[in-house]
Image (cartoon, rainbow, N blue to C red):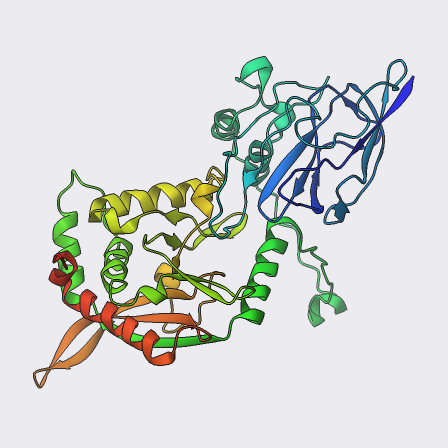
Amino acid sequence: MGVHVIKIPDIGEGIAEVELVAWHVKPGDAVAEDQGLADVMTDKATVEIPSPVAGKVISVGGEIGQLMAVGSELIRIEVEGDAQGRAQAPASPATSAPAMPQPQPSLPTGEKNESRKPARVEADVTAVGKPLASPSVRRHASELGVDLAKVRGSGPAGRILHADVEGATAAAPPARQPQAQPQRASAGARLGRDDVENIPIIGMRRKIAQRMQEAKRHIPHFTYVEEVDVTELEALRARLNAKKDRTHLTLLPFLMRAMVVALRDFPQVNSHFDDNAGVLKRHGAVHIGVATATGAGLLVPVVRHAQALALWSSAAEVARVSEAARHGKATREELSGSTITITSLGALGGIVSTPIINQPEVAIVGVNRMVLRPMIRAGVVVPRQMMNLSSSFDHRVIDGHVGAEFVQALRGLLEHPALLFLDAG
């Protein structure tokens, strides 16, 4: 018998440490070659580390949420024969197990020249008595309360797929409701609960917290709020949506179109600010990020080249990238490279918000709730559909009057929607 030591691999791109976000095995477990051992997260991706050998887990080298340096010990596995001669510590994905997956997307980052695209890789090998599935399938099963041990996989070599998890949910009988127990009033019950639950902030939630903290600490935010009369826009949207053969239009495609038109006169708003180099990078293309709430936290999928998209094409692309983000299927390219961002809470939008800029961008446009209000028009009180735009700007490079003028330009376009479709030449 021998001992095979697996260390944190060099995932590349100058990464010195990773966060351990999930264990898939524990001491005493039997593991198969290529079986997933743990998930680690960098600032850009979540990577599953597979086992290059078959054997029995002796010990694990970290706790969930722990930051671990590249090259530090992850796990020890007892193997048949002498472990000497085996790859003791994979130095990179290329020198570790053949099934080492490419990073999956996590949080949005600035545009970078990537020479390779990430690919989703799901392990095919199932350990004896232990169902094996990809991290996204495990999360899916956990969210639906499905026990993977009771699911029959339809993938290669019995691998469990998303469809198998959903099928198990549909076939599961409704849970029995527990019988009501007689209430017993105690001193503690009368006083109320005073217990405390400690919830570690790890994984995606930690990355989001770090990004928000960095953006708020480094960027002096200037927030400007303006109300917009969207009565005509809503009437136009209703008429267009009456055409059943077209993609349903929400407010977002119209706002995206208004941003594209307004940015022609305010190109400095469609920029990245490199504060280390002291350089403002103005972008010719308009890549609009759409802040999207997901089960893993807030992600910003990107609609690229919005300036070249028609209204329905914008609507379809927003729906596509948002759905991919919610289901954990968005690629790194779809979650990075935005030049300006839209954020909206929909029906929960409230009256005013103070959105945080998606660094290194210099502006974010927030959409608040639409309400029917009495307004005075030509001396007469009439009902109008009103909505506030709450927008934030990086005050280091965008002066207050420039931010206000940009929002006023958006307002004019949204209140007179015919202007959205005029060719500026």
